[in-house]
Length: 320
Image (cartoon, rainbow, N blue to C red; front, side, top):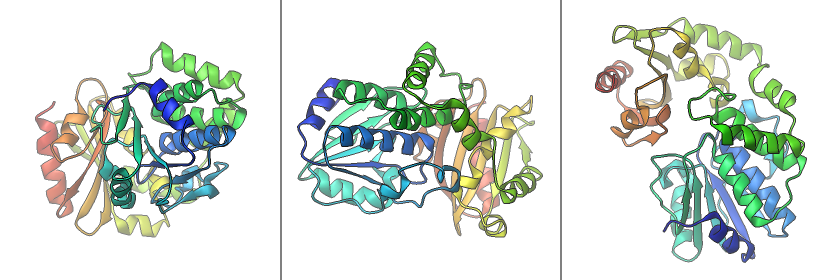
């Protein structure tokens, strides 16, 4: 059922323990939400664990507190809280454990993706620049303190999911939330440096190689980058090193949709989609069981790489 943040806050305050989990291949908003909520529960004296199936991506290794993230979901928590995850499948290896927990315990889903399936007992889904904005409102509803560490977690998510305040879903509320976080001590300059202004040499070299092979399709309205497992191995890369790759082709005047086709394993590709002005990539991803936002979404495709690109190109052509 849908619930208000006040109702969810009341349920959390009554819990004797909680597990907080987020989606596989986590980004800044995912970890920002989870770690900020964990810090709030710590302040309220509620024992909790943060769980995610993935290794810490290299681009977020600077984060304080990542050492507390565990890969297995505790079976004995009183409350299970999923953040920034549009459906159970996005929880990856933790999805089955979450479903099993839901048979005996209350579950909560707090998210901002328009494609969210309302998969928990209590659901709060509100479309906004970053889910960290929803978590900020929840922390306020909980009456938990907003200290510098928590503010930094939340601003991390806001910066990453808003494209550093450049996406078309950025509103007055986005900036008001950012101002509140800065007032609480969030360090904008340090976060910008860690997120956007430094990288290992291997990433720079990989970036140059991948962008040198951009496919220009549909009269240059679609740009596709292919990131193979061989390329990942060549540069010793993890998923974190490819963060932001899909955004570069959108800088080309004619491009409306940019797609990253990343090989996960032989025959399986993670598709990340971005659009500039009018194409609804949430609907494009939805054709293949994925989803996300109007301007940013993702899905999985299976097959040989050229077949995957051909199928994706045809689907995109239907929305241009």
